[in-house]
Structures are given as C-alpha cells and as structure tokens.
Image (cartoon, rainbow, N blue to C red; front, side, top):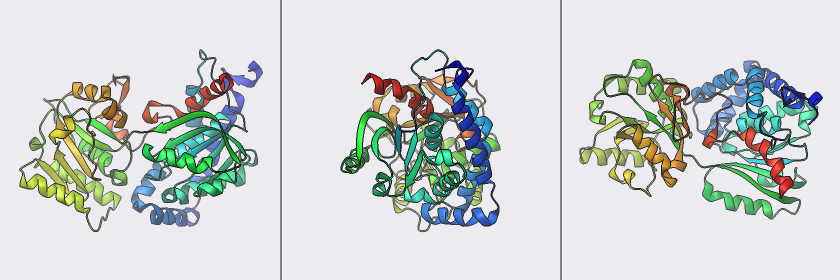
Length: 402
C-alpha cells in the first residue's frame, strides 16, 4: 500500500469511512421524536422488548458510536507490525446473519464490514428489523458511495437476489446448530457462489460475574449494576449475567433487602410486564422451595444455588430456563477451570467483577471487565474474544493463498 494512501499506516479510506459513518449515525439517532418514535414503537412490537429497554440501548449507542470511537477502532484494528492485514474490496461480499435477541445487535458487524472496505450483505432478524433497517435506509439515502456496497433484508431469498457472484466471508451470530441449514439455503441459490471458507461464528451464551471478596460487602450501586446485568433485555444477551460467583453462599444474601430492592428497581425502570410468568421458572422455584435450596425470586428472575450437575465436565454452565441465574460459592480458580473446559469455555462471553480492578487483569486470556459495563460495552469490544474488524482485515491474504 502506498504511504500516500495511509495515515500512521492506517488506510485513509478507512479513516474517512469512520468519519462518515460516525457523522451519519449521530444525525440518524438524534432525529426528532416524530421521526424516531414510530420506528421505536415498531421495534417494541417486533422484538418483545419493552420500550424502556429499547430506549436504554439507543441512548447507549448514541454515546458509544461517534466519529472518534469509530476512528479509534480502525486505528486499534490495524497493526503496524502485521503485514497480512489488507483492506477488502467493494466486490468482497461479507454476509452477516444477525441475531435478534437485542435491539440493533448486528450493528457492530455492519460497521466492521463497512470500515473494512467490503460489501455488507445483512440478513436482519425480523425481531430486530425496525431500527436496523431504518438506519441502513438512512445511510443508503445520504451516502451514495456507501450505498453501492450495502444490501440487507429480513428474507434470505430477497437478500440473495441483491448479491451477484461470490460470498467471500460469513459472520454468523446465533445457535450454531442452525448454521448448516442456513448455509444450505444459500447454496441452493444459482446466483450465489462461495469462494472461501472464511466464517466467524459466535457461540457464547452468557457471562459470569465475580461478586466480592470474603471480607467486603456490596454497595447499593454494585447491587444495581448486578440487577442491570441480569435483567436488561430479559437476560437474553450474551453479555447478560447467567452465573454469579461469590465468596459467600446464596443464603448469606437470601434475605438481603439491598438485593431485592435493586432487582425491583431495575424491573420498574425497564418496565417489564411478563404475563403470564414463565411456567418453567415457576416450577424451578417450587423445586427449590420444596427441597430447601437457597433462592431469591422476583417475577422475572430466579437466582438459585447452582445444581451439582453444573460441576460435571460435559454439562452446560448456564441454566436452560430463561430468567434463571445460578449462584456458585467459589473463587477465581473456578472460573479458570471453566474457561479451560471445551464446552463451558465456549459458552462464556465475558467475565465481570463488581470490585475495582486493574484494567489489564485477565483470566485465561479473557479480560476481566467492570460489571457496570455489562449492558453498555464500548464499540470496539470483542465478541467471543474476536475483533470482527481485525478478523476481516486478515481474510484477503488467506483468500490469495488458497
């Protein structure tokens, strides 16, 4: 790459794209209420999330996505010592199969493809269509150059018709067991050919928090951060807490007013109204009560002492019942053993701490994050430990070698 085309070894085109995307994003998300309210209302109807949760996400994204944060992500993703990094070409198609469990959950991948220089082909979930499609439409209308390398649809067949030639890479977020069937749908389309096996699959299910040291107690703000991490978006995100690791048994906090008050406060703020309450969760609560298993219950959440089966090597780390969080008495070494376990390690998205910690602290190469960032990650966070922009920049050299 010619040095005249770079700024501090970062392609000028990537820097310019970051500026454009940041500017247009800020314009779009700060449109007047008469424009945004119908979009938000449609999102609530599609997703099943409350309006409060959707607005919570939009406020976070408004703060997190700026020209500065996009530029920082680009600079972070390009390494001066890695000669294998290359920009994608507008003809390099990256097909993103987005999940629909959170509002605008596919946004980071969309930005990653646009910043890489490639062609974004987005299969948008019907549960997350209103906001995502409105943003893409705005971008297409206001940036003709970018519009030539953006296509999306909630229907696979419709998206296929907008792509001609090769799919160079896939980014898939969802249940891995459905991945093969999705690819077969695309393989049957005559206009689509696959020129590579570059595939990034997100497998993680939920996250873990280390609550406190044995000689410390939690503050009201820490209880509130824990409640947010469990209850926002009904606990459906991979960054939502599914396991609590504590120096104390759950019985130590079972009758804690601070815990229950925080849970109920977040429920009120997020305006959850689950009717009827999930029967499986009610049955799990009844089982805990009948067998004298320590538990804490609010309508939308059951925190219970972890069952013994959780500690078996081939068993899942997280409860299969939505809204059930396991409480484990233990220490950091337990998290290390889980991360080393092939099954459990692949299920863990993030590890949080409720205590102040060194920003560089890691467990088995997994960064330990502050609990209050669980539902408000920075734009450049790394799902499943992989920076999607940097991953894309590594692919062209692999395509040339194959």
